[in-house]
Every structure is written in C-alpha cells, then in structure tokens.
Image 1 (tube, rainbow, N blue to C red):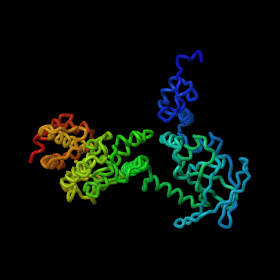
Image 2: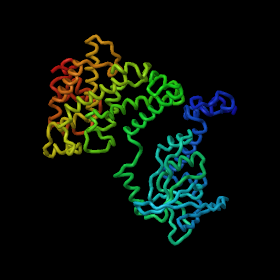
Image 3: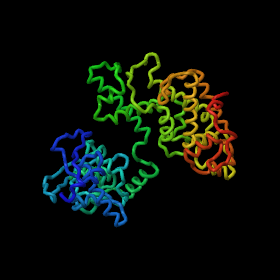
Image 4: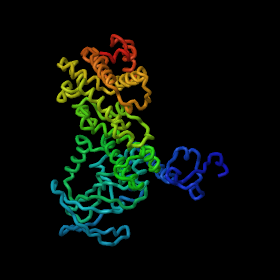
Length: 499
C-alpha cells in the first residue's frame, strides 16, 4: 500500500446516486485508474463486469468471444446430465449430484400448434449446457446493461428455452438454445439456478429453423423506438396517477407541473424526463389525425415506406419538441386550447400533415416503395416524377436540412412580427394563419426544386448516401462541397416562404 499510495482513491461502494450511504461502512480503497474506469457505477457491479471483461479478453487469444458455455463452466456449471421419469402427464427428476435428493414432480404440457411437449423447471447451473448448434451466437455487448438491470433488482421477464432428448435413454443434458444473454447475466451475478422452459424430445430441425427465422425474416429483436416511446408514455401516465394518489388529488386535477413530477420521482429523475418527452412524441405519432404516419415504417427495415421512425426521431422530434421539462402546471391554459404541450403536439402534427399533403398523399406509390429507385433509373426504368421527388426528399440527410430551413422560416417569422418566442419552444407558441401559409409555401417551393426530379443525377448526387453537411452546403451555396452547381441559387429564407 505504501508503494501505491499515490495511485489510490477512497470511493463509495454503492454510489450516492443509487442511495448509497455517505459513511465509513460504504467506503472502499481503490486504484485511481480502476475508479475512473468504473465512473459512477456500483463498486460491486463494476467488479462483476470487470470479471466478465477478463473472460472476454482471455478468449480473444483463441480468436473468439464468450458464449453461455464459457460462463457456465467458469461458474461451475455444465457438469451433469439429468435423470428423468416421464409418465402419466408428469415429469420427475432429482438433483442428487448437487446434494438435493428431493424428487421434483411437475406436470408437462403439449403445445397445441406445434405438438411439442414441455415443462418448466428451475435448474441448478450444474445441469445446464449451451446448445451452440441451434444457437451459435456469442454474447453481445448488451450483456453489461442486462447485468446492470438484474443487479438493480429488476426481474427477468422471460425464461430461457432448453431441450432434452429422452428417446432411448432416461438421462440427458439440458441444453439452452434461447435466452442465453439473460442466463449469462444471472450467472455473472452469482445466481446458481436458472428458470427454463424445457422441450421434451423436440424436432431439432424445427427448433433450428424457428430460431433462424427469429433472427432473420421475423427479426424478433428488442423493441423498436416507436414501441419504446409508447411504453414511455404509459409509464408517464402511471406516474401522473401515482402523484395524484400520493397528494390526494382528484383524477382530473393536473395542477402540478412536469418539473413537480421529476422532483417527486427524484430517484428516477432522468427516466421521468424521458417518459415526459416520450408522451409528447407518442402523442404525435399516434394522433389519429396524423396523415404522415401512413408513410412511416415503424420497424425501420421495410422497403415500402419512404420514412423510417428513426428519421422522424432525429428530425421532427429532435428539432420541434422542447427537450426540457416545463415549470407551468400541466393544466395551464388547457381549457383555452393553448396549453404549451398540447399546442406543441397539435402543431407538429399539423406540420406533418402539410408535408404529407404536399409530398406523399396520392404521389408516393407504396407498392413501388423505396427499393433500388436510383438503380432502376440508371437501368432506364420509368419512375413517376412525383414518386421520385418524395423518395429523394424523404432521405434522412436531405429531410434533416430542409426541415432546418422550415425551422428558420418559423423563427424568422416571429422575429419580423415582433413576437417574443423562445427558439427552443417555437411549437409551444400558437401559429397565426399567415405563418401556416408561409410554411405551406416553403414546403411547396422546396418540393418544386428541379434537383428532385433530375433523373440524370441518379448516378452522381443521389448515387450514394451523403451526410448532413453535404446537403447543408448545397442549400446554403447552391453547389456541392466539390463545387458542382446543382441549384440555380442558394435557398433564401425570405423568398422561399413566398408564393
């Protein structure tokens, strides 16, 4: 310790932000470099993740990444086959090898559609193995976040899937083929028994095919962003109800602010802010009057619709939704129809409708979609010019820049009319009719630029994905960063908004 005293820190074992106590029992001596690496993480969690990192680095020497089997073996698992007796609709087994001679007797079930039999068990890791045939995937980088979730006391929502082969034998290894990340996170945290749904004598080819489809054609992955926003909205509504209950407020009493909610739920203040913003985004996305949603691909992988939900998040919601919580009561000017958040949602929706009317409705062919449009042009195929215009203007890097122009038109209108408006809250200020006219004119004038229907540019300007700065340069100067003239003149904020 004397030799290293200049490299030592004293830090909290459980961080203060996680309700750790600022007292001697919660202090630990750490190396400064390790302490900086863990940042504000719980020290015990940081140690667990560090152990996993050591396993990962060790396996790099074998030119591979960890899988569930590596963690099972490291934790003393994957040792024994399990003896079963299957009869009269029941399965019996014992974990005698680990000192538990109790006879476990559970029912088994038959899947009505596949005909496969299965039962549920909570098995010691000594009896669990990883099936690297059905599931050859290694453990991904999200294991850290999943481990942190379980460490924080959040439950595992889905059990792992496994199978046993009892044909011609009464013993079998229990092989996990799905849910390996959940099982791996539990094992890292020291859990010695894992809940599993176990298929009995399954058709392995069918399991392999099913697992393959889940990862390819069906793409059964984590929730997409739009679903996350919807869940966030649900959580926001739940917090509102809890706040009302705790303060003995009537169900229709919303005389408190977003800031009040964040302060009250201070243990999850960051999450609470996200829920509030999710509620705004979700309110626009799922507004039944929103005509643009017909042209948004919420899965993000389709070839039919011109807009991805990810692009909507990076543009509309990033530019036009105020990103901080409000101090005014949620009920502020609600009955007048001038509540800031309601105005924000309504006016973003109306802007989306203007764009849908001008660019997409009766213009973009959903059957033709977005697949290989520029390549088809280069091959001489006919593409309707209205479809081509909508397709090109909906590319994320292009839409990003022309929506920025709309944002400037908005702000310029408020300045020239002498209206005091916060640049970060433009959509929380009611738009007069003339501003809506200016916005419609701007969208129309942008859409009539010849560049969008110039088929000769399919192999050059539109031949590959450009970045935001590329199109910012074009709109600002009329030329590409390489000096190629593509617009007759730069975009002028004053003239673009005129008829």
